[in-house]
Length: 469
Image 1 (spheres, one colour):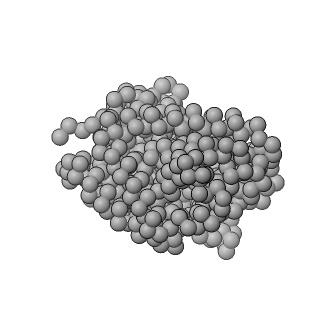
Image 2 (cartoon, one colour):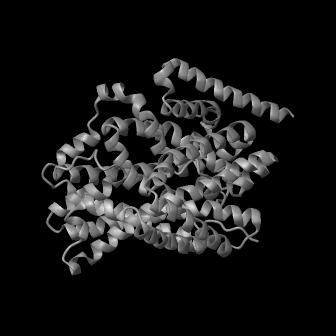
Image 3 (cartoon, rainbow, N blue to C red):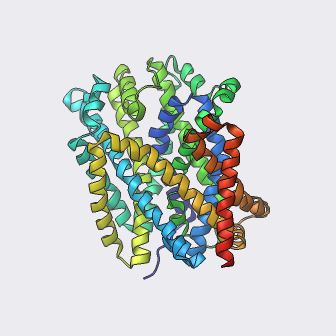
């Protein structure tokens, strides 16, 4: 079976950026920013994206292009080890877990878009009158499960089209549309009275607040960075496996990270000024903040129903651009490793996620666990495994793959990059997990750092013994 490839470099960049540019930026980013101090969270988030996200993105690219296989096949082929194959197989589980809650949120968005479109005919969108009560009514239950299935069907239809005719073609339309519509809305919001307070909350740099809350926001900021860049799930391993050798991985990774971060900041420049202009507290609402807060703002604005159509249209496109990448991970595993046809793989996985997503749609506590704790653990653990593999199993092969197609400046950074992905970033990821678990509050900062170093050192000793054996 001939393996598919991207038709163009632009197609790959937009597909990878589309995976990153999704609900993580427009739904989760404003919610997490508001819940963690505004500009202090933004500062830590940007640091993590630059210092951890981009090198991690390149680590997954190197593995995927080197092996030209899905995460499970790539780790098995490059290491010759079934143990590493099992580690790679977890990516398929991560993709299913991600889609099991993501499609539920996608269903919320489809519902809001549908209600917005029919609003002019029905006398106004139903959520405009009582945003909070409306969201509480529709967010979970069997109607929410039905919209989850609709969103899942749209996702499956795109992935069924394949790499070029489905994923690449779809993201070439969706990602530019998201950027244009967000830019237009950001330009409009600046004219609203009271918007300045939103810009101050989002962009105002407060060094004292950052110092006081750095470790409190580190875990959420790291989780958000990994989620929005789609690292740790094997998405970028899968997408890079469809690449040619002439592409500069450092350049492509930088462009993708820039696009992703730009959309997140743009979303903040729309959401926070809009909320503050209407006197809405951005820190309330949790996962429903986007729906409750934004809907409340639209209710108070002239022409709010039409604005809502544009906004939820943007969010729908962004959601689909990410959900297709989540489904593509296990699809690639079944096609590459099981020899399945794409049609069969998509059909079986849609049936599986239809069940798991329906369960999360009717059980709010399970949704919160999957969308928060489970996903953060899977993404952090997944990225940790990929980076250790690149830094200590591939080693010189990783450097060779990194410099292939890269320019002279990027090539000179290859050795520092290998040190970062093999030692520095793994220590940071373990430290983040420990601080999230509250270890630093019990034993102190430096003992927690020492524990992170000890954990990574023990893993590295194990990898060296395995290599010698």
